[in-house]
Length: 121
Length: 107
Image 1 (cartoon, rainbow over the protein chains, first blue to last red):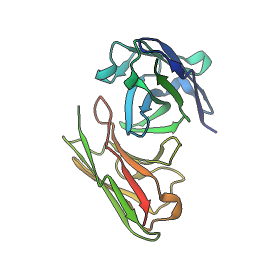
Image 2 (image 1 turned 60 degrees about the vertical axis):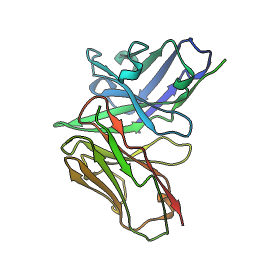
Image 3 (image 1 turned 135 degrees about the vertical axis):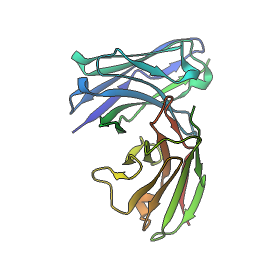
């Protein structure tokens, strides 16, 4: 069974940093693009960043560029999101998601259960 | 960024009703669109990708259509387990962008 399990969320002060992790199992991690999404409490979904199979290509949402770094360790089937200079508006549930692709068609499945980041003093 | 305008923002319907949700893209995105269902406190679940391809295991009462700028998600006969929030997501261009969501409630 394919599974994604996020960890690393928690309470952090404004200006602080956090590193989220996502452990993948049940599929060949190294052959897929991976993404992070987030959802602020009571709000809609937002795509945050993605990374290709070998980590050589990364894309970020403009509003977060410069404060985020997405990375992966294929030997450990793990995806990471380093977040710096955190702000109250970064408070959200962060989801790790596998990107499927076949002949130019994309899909996002499965999703992890999420890890909650709360930025507050 | 491509703007996705989803409507309605919420609707009330009864079990057995036919439900239609629409998404309009601010520019053409071919069929690079997916539909996701999210229940309260849960992660989103992929229903349809490439505008009309039903994900494995998703009931056939769900269907998607459209291309270019206008897309539709249809639930042919609403079931109790379908009460949730639905989102469209375009993957034609970066940044990937969602519609605002449609909350489907029990009438």
